[in-house]
Image (tube, rainbow, N blue to C red; front, side):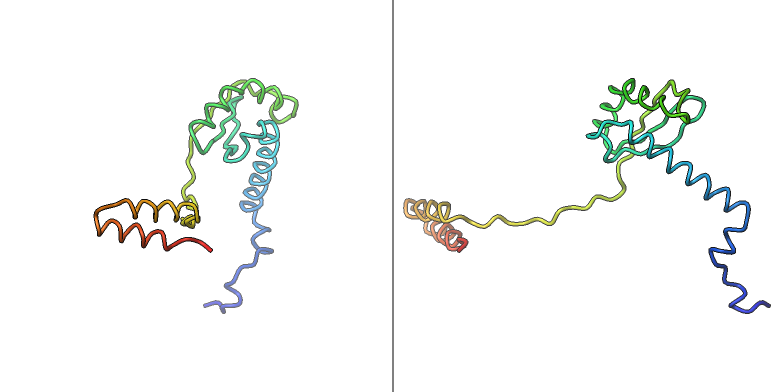
Length: 148
């Protein structure tokens, strides 16, 4: 049995394997292709758009919303014209856009808006005109939550 120190593989050792080298090279090529594609996409559509593939003249992109996908489809000729200037995308003739919503969305923390002095005054005024005692007390209590 090998010692633990011999079992641990470092990235240096992994880099020498031909399969991993090929995989890293493909990932780098994909990253560069995505940079070129996103440079051709209009600025307002770049956020949430990803490059998926380009095979046999068919460019495949993904957008996070259906509205953004429609806008990309609408401007596809403009995008493909810019892309054809690059050697990698010289033969692109078709653009396909898929909708892929993000897995997780950060929900902004809900913040209660503080009660303004004007709204507190209006609540007190309304409480003075109300005949129902319970409702009057509730309105007065709400009015007391004014920001300082």
